[in-house]
Amino acid sequence: LLYQVVNNRNELLLRSADAPTTALTAPLRTGFYNMAGLRIYTLAHPQLPMFIHTGDPLAHRSAIRMKTLASLVVPLLVVLPLLGWLFRAVTRRVLAPAGRLASDLQQRDGNHLGALPGQGLPTELQTIVDSVNHLLLRLADALDTERALAANAAHELRTPLSTMRLRLQTALEQVADGPARQGVQDTLASLNQLSRRCEKLLQLSRAESGAALAQERVNLGQ
Image (cartoon, rainbow, N blue to C red):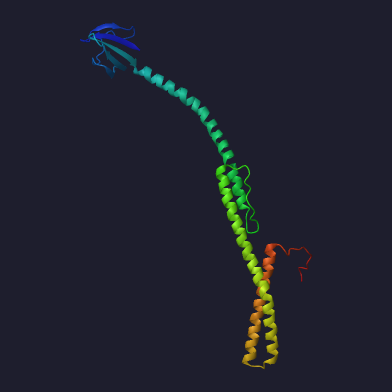
């Protein structure tokens, strides 16, 4: 920094060694000014008719600014990649339970509706797991009810259908050829088709429940 002391007529009274030999033309009032490549601050004496000009070369200020920026940017270029790697590692570690939870959910289907494991999960995910387990339980109950209804309906219909088929076969033997006999035959065919569908429905229910699973050798040619 350089300085000059002047009177109220802007006559030079005192200066630093590197200050100009003539008084600066800055206004004689307190404040900042830019002039002659300098950033000048003028301060008025509180009692005497004197002013002091302190100046800082703009080139020097620019050099200091660039040096300061360099001292900040260079460490940031080193620190930012490390921070990015650290954030990535921390984020992956924090979100790992969510990834495992998503993988467990993808493995659930109609035959596997077991509860999701909830050990070691954050509180936020634990609430979600509890809600999903409750939903899976209700879904499993609904599927079991549906399968039981289909199996019971098919099982309960076997006896009435067999009785009706026997009666129609008996009636068919007693009815002479004609429209009436054709009607009984059509009814018997429809009843046989309904019986086969009920039997398939019962087999499907057993297959889904896994109760009738067995392994035996079969002749694929037959």
